[in-house]
Image (cartoon, rainbow, N blue to C red; front, side, top):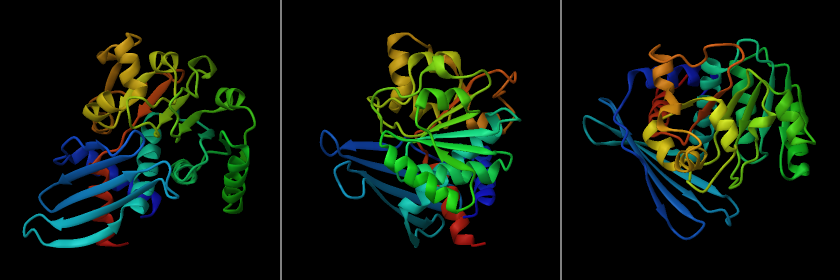
Length: 291
């Protein structure tokens, strides 16, 4: 799944569409979650099963079953984690390609977990003009280790010591954390910044505060998912900081040219994703077809 090819495949899938029921989330306990994510079109059916267990050695594990839509025959069982990491990162980079300012040159990755490195790789692949990458994590050693890993791959990256300063310097701020309290403040964002919120997938999870959401043009992967599951939208909608109309559209509508993502260079844009099985369907098709 090369980055540009994967992003283009995702773009085609968003534009074309598919049948994607709202994912089912089941609480296994106060902290553990089971997610069931189906999708299908005239060729393929996929079903992804995801477990999120924060106390486990591997927090997130996933499996994707791919079925021939016409015959019902199973075609493949795929490593859902590998598929999810790459398609999630590619979707965020695709959204940034559509929404970030044309001259965006500095990327900040907030978080140093399993997904963070893939986010950096995807954004650089889709935007070669990025000449400065920062990584910030609540555990400085983890951020430094990730920065060193990416630097060995040739990326222009360094660990950031202070989040507020790093946010103010970044053209694209990409959050991939499991935070339940806001990390990024609207007061820190510079005009023209693109804010990408990936980590939060439950109503009690937050990566940005109400000010950041309220000042931004908000786009989502799916309104049905993001506006009911993502705390970064659910909470400000509930407390009146924003109204439903503040979410101006879905990524698919931007890619089809039906919604304008960015009106002016100084707009702050925000892309909130909770993940959609449409992305898994597209990625699985790419894997089956091969390079």
